[in-house]
Image: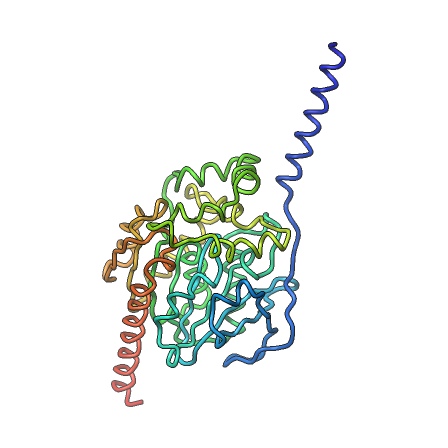
Length: 354
């Protein structure tokens, strides 16, 4: 009997080890392949035809293309409109499609709206989990914007889009002309702490994988982060989750949760300190639009107000993915910032006689 028990225990230990290895494997590079080319105001890029389930969410005037920022690493970009560049950066675990409802309320006859998707998410390249660092994400997106060769950008950032977007401007400080900040965190931590219980769970090896990749998909829980859960129906959650499932590499959402800083010594904190230093050097129009029903980031609004003390604040009933809930309020803030930037540019030109 003892021998049988030992054999069973050995099998269970082996099975557990195999499962742990499978769950925590780093994942592999998955590179999207386009068809043909797309010509934009910035040049010609690799066209990426959207699958039907995604194409139905946007209009035919959208461009869909890929920018290769490193060998095998491509960023998927949605673009619509002509005129002043407006750069919209989503966060974890969504994609550029998160901005589609905001775009409906923007004057695309005057705005060139650019919506790139972070590496690891949506239709962008998927990379091993270990490559999902704040520094890498910033550098990849910076390389994409460099290829677009933009000037006088008005930027809007939410969630990880705050770190990625503002991080880009630490590398190209003269690129930014105005900003709208949504629910995000760009304040460098000065002491150890936790962002949320969900992030604590995610940081636990194996447990994080089980809870967010095996037992329940993170995409099936997006509605829980909303002020109105009905604003995140299953077909919209699938719009964000299906590209990862079908790629075979779903590592990005968990890896990005683990990359949220837990204290001043965390690698991401160094990028946040660079962002804080950069913000001290700029004098641009800024507005804040905040979802007050965000279970994760609502409490960070005072930090954002401290960083931008002169920025008007629009408090909404939205949750974390407020683009799905209050697109008109976000669009209105973007329009106000663009008008202020254009007014400042006209005044500057008049003053210099240009």
